[in-house]
Image (cartoon, rainbow, N blue to C red; front, side, top):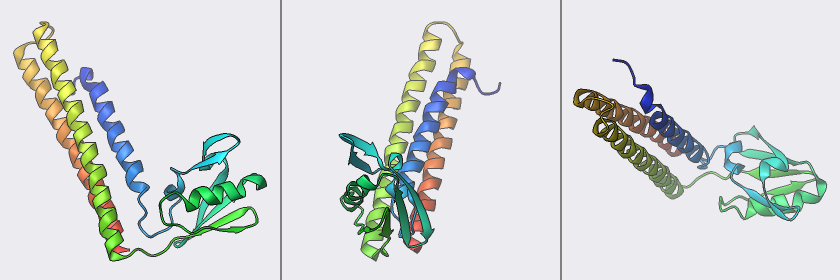
Length: 186
């Protein structure tokens, strides 16, 4: 018996959890310029908070610099202020409509903190995956209780759910290990 389609919604939720982990890990500054570093920033603009990517384009001209090209000249100061206050310890400078954001090298202590933060994100993802596993197991038990599947099928589906859980937990561990290696070697 192949993979049971009734488990697809649970697999999809686990995939989304891994995707979210990838985004969180890419947002952790690892000492190298990455446009993902500025993705979460919101800017006070036009009477509301707007994502930075709706006001400017971000590029990484080299490993230690980000360039933020603000489209509306009137928003340059607001964008610069949002970058300065984002909590990533960045010191942007304005050059016309371009904001240059030098990426300072990380101290060993800061690398350890970022590594722990990455581990926290991975653990939260694994908890989410286990919660999805619990929901899937409840679903499988309900199918058996309703007489829709036999006890043997219930055990096969339960094994499939556990296999999914193990696979996605492994993916979270692999993503974490890769990111921690990157953080520590820069």
